Image 1 (cartoon, one colour):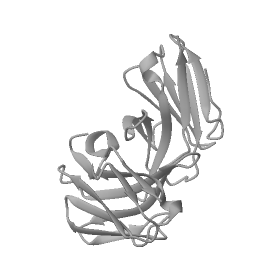
Image 2 (cartoon, chains in turn brown, cyan):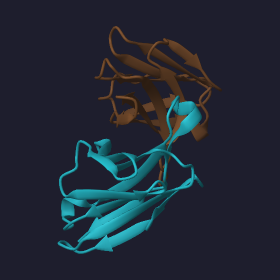
Image 3 (cartoon, helix red, strand yellow):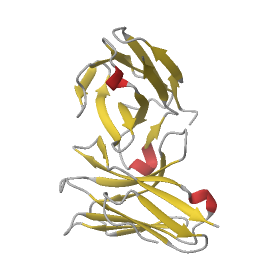
Image 4 (spheres, helix red, strand yellow):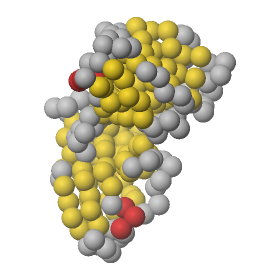
Length: 111
Length: 115
C-alpha cells in the first residue's frame, strides 16, 4: 500500500505486504527529517531519522528515503504487521532544534 | 517514556479560568517543546525553550504562555481558557546532535477540555 503526500490521510494495507507512506516537506534548509509512529492515546514514538545530506537510511523493517530535489520523504515498512497500525507523521528539524510536523497518515493493517 | 512526564493527564476546566500544564524531564535535555494535537491538524508547535529562561513562540502561541525556571521543568499556561483550546497537549524534549542519539522524546499527553 502507498499514500501520496500529506493530503491522503489514510492507508489500508494487507498484513505481510510492504507499506509506503509519503510526505512532502516545505523547508529546504531542514537539517534532519524524522518519522514518528503514534498509537491511540500515546505520544509520538521515534521510528527513524535521516540527515539532510543522505538519501536513504535503513532500520529494522523500515527504510526512509529522502529526495531533496522535490522535497519528498517516504517511509517504507517491510512485511507490515498488525502492530504497525497507527498514525505516522513525518517531521523536519530546522534551525538546529525546531521540530515541525506534517498532518499524518493513518495506517490500518488488514488481517 | 519514563524520561518525560506530563501532569495532569486529564483536566476539565471552565471557560475563562487559567490552567497550567506541567512537563518534567529527567534527561537533562536542553530543548523542550509544547505542542497541541487536534483532528486534521497533526501536532502544532505552541512554544519552545532552548534553555533555562529562554523561550520563544511557535506557530499557535496566542493565548498561551510558558516558563522554564529549571532545566527539567517546562510549564504551559492558558491565561484564560477558551473552548478552542480544548485539545491534547504534548510535551517533548531533546538534547543536541542527531535525533536518534538525543531524543525528541514525547510525553504521554494531557487531554484538556474547556467547558
